[in-house]
Amino acid sequence: MKTRKDALVLLLAGGVGSRLNILVENRAKPAVPFAGLYRIIDFSLSNVMNSSLSRVGVLTQYKPLSLMRHIRGGEAWDFTGRSRGVKILPPRTGEKDSDWYRGTADAIRQNIDFIKAHPSEEVLILSGDHIYHMDFDAMIAYHKFKKADVTVGMMVVPMSQIHEFGTGIVDRENRIVDWEEKPAVPRTNLASMGIYVFDTQYLLQTLLRERQEIDFGRHILPRAIGQDRVFAYPFYGYWRDVGTIQSYWETNMDVIREGSGIAPEKWGIRPNLEADERPMDRAPARFMTGCRISSSMISAGCVVEGTVINSVLSPGVQVGKGAVIRDSVIFEDSIIEAGAVVDLAICDKRVRIGADAIVGYGDNKSQPNREFPQHLYTGISLVGKKAEVPAGMKIGRNSIVRPGLTAAALTGCRQLDDGEVS
Image 1 (cartoon, rainbow, N blue to C red):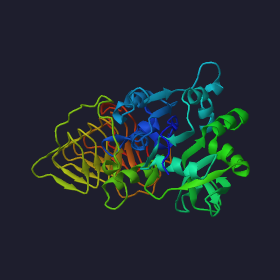
Image 2: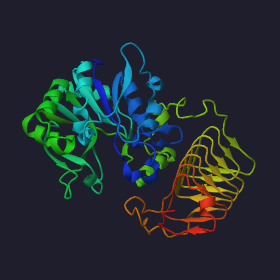
Image 3: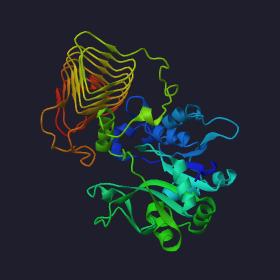
Image 4: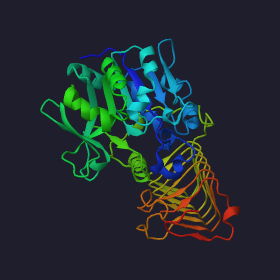
């Protein structure tokens, strides 16, 4: 069954994403770089483009400037033309505190005028912070076939993770008959992906009638399941919520791990290489005599003299002679000087690791970060944007070097212990 291409897309991209710690200190979570060339939101935007949908509203809120510069007018995803386009939809702030988006449903409610101005039969609601490949046209066709009021994208996840999601109990027809939001004692392993198709008129009526309901998962879906036609759309492909440091790191590692299921190029995921102050034409990566590369992704503009193992290097990264990068994600234009070691770390843009310094020192990965124990607890260390680690300094496991910290500020400090914040 072929659906008409008239669905309106609303992409939720305003979350704080605090669990990503210093990676979101100056940017919204969907704007965080991913897998060398991309930002997280590129996956949702590319899925919309590849599903032949063309009218998109992006709901922003938290530190949106980097995200807005990246999306621009949507040209990178072909959202330009007489009947195509991307519209940035910020909160209507100014009159009172409640003008800020208080939840997913409240965010959509504040943009009812945008929905009414773009007539459609269905509204597709997405999150801008997931890594996946999905045919939304097929989901909308399924929604129509079921004559659903609401269709929820759902997939099976490990029971150990189900407490992080909204969960649904379904009957033989995939109709959702019960719902639990982040259950402590789960009854199912079927989790919501945060992807919804609503009948447009049903959505408008619901938002206008139930104004106290501010969140889809906590409020609207549980009530709708008891009264209306709510169905699960089963999804069996690759999908990851990269809202934590651990899941973000693991998903980057999946890009270079054979058989993981993630394939951005094959999926047709498009970055916006003309935005974000990026040089449009990087020279090819250069691999100097004596370098060693193993199971890694090396982007254009990189210069590698040392060793890179099981790591992702964004454009313009320099790896000095004798330096070693292992199990790490390095953002654009960072410099790892001669003899330095970066082991199990994420380094933001334009970081400089001084000669013979070590990021990820020692074998004790079990000491959580003292200030953020729920963010860093598996040994991963973070180095913030434009931070400098002085020559010879040792940074322990689960540690944080804050953005913009200069080598001069760390003069006299030879070691940052496990779990410390500079």
